[in-house]
Image (cartoon, rainbow over the protein chains, first blue to last red):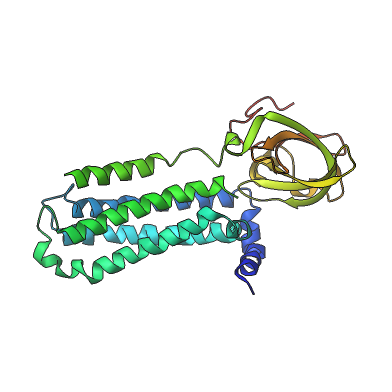
Length: 163
Length: 138
């Protein structure tokens, strides 16, 4: 079974078809997706801006992260669930959409970024967490995060303009 | 400091591009100066979000038949205008007034669809800024 056939199969399942052909459910899930992105990207930006030494400079990085990141995870979960639902509803069409592919690659990169960050420079956060301007490695991770999530939002919006 | 400004600028630019409008606009895909009327037999219906599509076989002056795609509003907007999924039957002859895609393909934005019983429905996506958008629905 090719990837295209898998996408077509997902597209034709009962729940995906019901969502695609719905009058209200689809726009509701779309709205939830946008709100979840706002929660996720908004809260992760607070941590990124702290890492860049732009906001909350007097608060230790770990305290900002501990308070804010649970909300980021909540947004991420909601965003993923709603995103999978919307993707399933349009799976056959999305298979050929170049921007959707770019978005998936960007999502993988945006996922790798915190994995690398938490397994490297963040391990020594007790040493630099109170610096107003954290070390370059931490700032780089923050810039990658802000750039990737911005690009993902732009790509998500651009999907509608390509077939 | 330069890094900070660059990071903020990049972030703001990223968010700024994200429009608050509904789905894609008329002008993104269709040419408002290329009006066309298609008459043909319905071959397929995609009753789907965020846009519906239906396909008709259209015969040109030389007798060649081509299958044209017609894009319309989603199920919610169409059903509020009185067009239900079952109203479009495969094999029906439809008259579709719309505008051609900018890329010249066999795709039109269906602004008005006339069914075999003479009933006609505005097919445009609400708020897309295309011809007849929010206009009178005669």
